[in-house]
Length: 402
Ligand code: SAH
Image 1 (cartoon, rainbow, N blue to C red):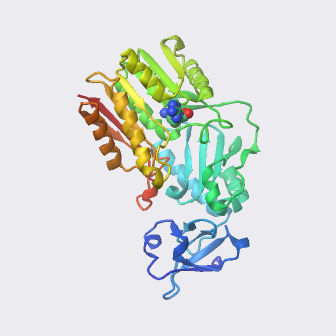
Image 2: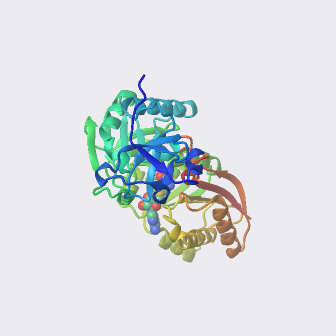
């Protein structure tokens, strides 16, 4: 076998530690480069200056602060269709080891950096596969990736949802979205998650259509819901509410500002044969809804807070944490003693400790104690690779108010 050959870049002396230890990124200031702009996005080999030792192969983009992202540490491995097929197969097998694919047919097949394929997301919704490309390196490999997907997944449809703001950091001009391959989508895709049915709007839904990462947390919620009145804040298409209702919640109230998502929530109740007359779907800002409930003196047995990421970057940390503090404190006013507060954060910039401190402050302000009964994180299809701390993002606390 001939060793594949790629142009070389040299990492600056003393900057090789992180990438040598398995981190996928090299920042712009750490590489010696005079790569012409036409080659941005192409594959390069990274070598250390002393002894010229190879350390990683990946793609380079001089437009991005994250100038290099590693794809392999094996010098004999070419970045071609075979590479992607092999990776996709391995990652699929890993999912199948931990996910019962008879009761769950929707999960994330590829989670970017955390799965060793930086800049690429692939979500499976039954036999529909959604691809999301974040970087120029992946953009240039688009055709190869789609061919490999066809080989490995045998999809009915491949759809693209690269309408994500992060692409601008790569100087990628547009945010492509649309049909890529196979049968055209004519409506929502029905999926099965722990034997619960959901409709997913791949074309116009948020992210790639569904928040797959809360799958196991939604299931775990059920043990707190039997006979209870459950308020689901930031409900989207009613994920937590459907599970709660199936577990015998007497009433669920789903609140979201996305009217279309709430329409889907209603239909998600229907396809699971749940009566919608016992359940409410409220198109309203959660902050206003909570105010309104407080004024009326309403109480709930279980309150779920699963807001969008309040902290999107380091600069918004303070403001975002204040948001988490506010919403948690306000929710506590609607809970009686013994009630359950479920509080989640999907901000990668908010660590476990930061969230815990925020919850502690919220409890102090609401003059109560919060006892954590369950602390959960992201599932196996959104893996946390310990060498890539940036990929650790989901936190989920279940607490009893005392
Ligand atoms: N728990 C959901 C996912 C929630 S995602 C699930 O399991 O599927 C966050 C949701 O918050 C989105 O649906 C978004 O429309 C909604 N949202 C964002 N800001 C909001 C606000 N101020 N009031 C109500 N909903 C809001």
